[in-house]
Length: 218
Length: 285
Image 1 (cartoon, each protein chain N blue to C red):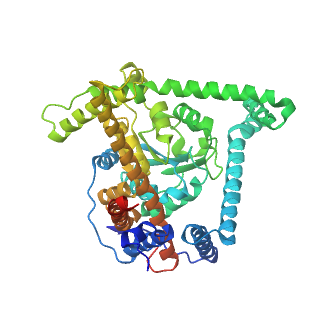
Image 2: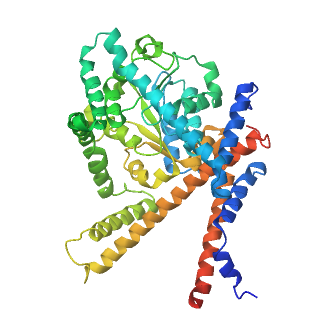
Image 3: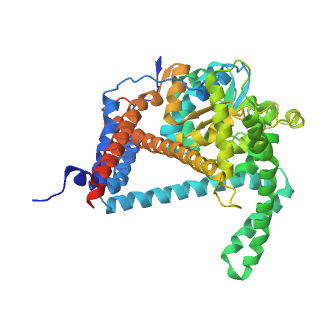
């Protein structure tokens, strides 16, 4: 076993950064743990402003690296087309020339759709169908066979549940009802994992609090 | 005197009381670790096995597509994966097509992985930062990395980064590890997934993509692990703890698991109490 190398900062800016982070975190938590207050609003607005500043700075830097710089230093003049299209998007804000922005939007939608459609079928549809209808190999564990049958029955029942062109009565009723139970089980698993994620976020904040206060090592 | 029973009172407890109990319940195990065992699940084992197959000089992409807010879930597994990649003497290309705050995550990974100390930036690993574009970006990166990243984070032109000399696309890269809070792993599966040879063969050969995801992704993405579209998958801090166990490090994933376990017990207790209370008071209203 080795331990993490991250340690409590020794420089003044590192320490200020840690305490600023801790105070802002406590300001934010003052809302659920107490009630809305000016400190919470200060922290919230600071977060929004900083996040926006970082996003603008990073995106401008990216624009410079991928378009402006190659255009001006390497003479890649074709890049002027996407740059103009990008600026045309901002005419969305000018009511008189709003129609101009529809062209870059149309190109964006079309190209994104094309890129997405080209990659979708194989991994998301074909591969999933192949995996669902392929039984485990001979000698596979009993659990693998159970999973195979479980998934097959679940798939049929849930698909039947979403066939809405006929009334779910008679012999179809138990199948669609079973499909509903499968959906509820899946939603339960999703919800459980969602709770796990939120607690994990909260746990890491509790850990941060204890680390800054030097109750536990960083 | 009030005729309210204990069950009535419990059902009307201020939610803030529960928040406080939860926060304290999460904090205490950090001070007094319980050391509960961590069992390794097949998706995490798949990721570890994939990493163990790396040869010296292989190139691995780490795509940081989770923000600082998801550190609790994604950072432990990222640190453990990078540790193993560097132990295998493989080279690392790091970038992000998902989150603008990836620089902070990158710095934290470098801080936490001691193996970086024996490696040289530019020779063994390189960091390109964030570039917007999502799926279109992933498609372009597959064929022409220089079309997206003209320079690294230090401003060195990509052509001048020694380790990038013969690397310009998916064909030069052994595997992609993508940390994920959403859909970015789908972009790699869709755009990097079928290689040219496998396209003719109806998906027989899949591009090696592994996901280091938040716990919320686990149920949805498990089907892609089972179908082989992801060779490995870690879900949340639990997955991080499992990978730390396999790699042999004691990181935040392992440390956090006690806290997570206690919080889950608290929630299960609250759900049981609430339902018992509901059943006992149902007929009285």
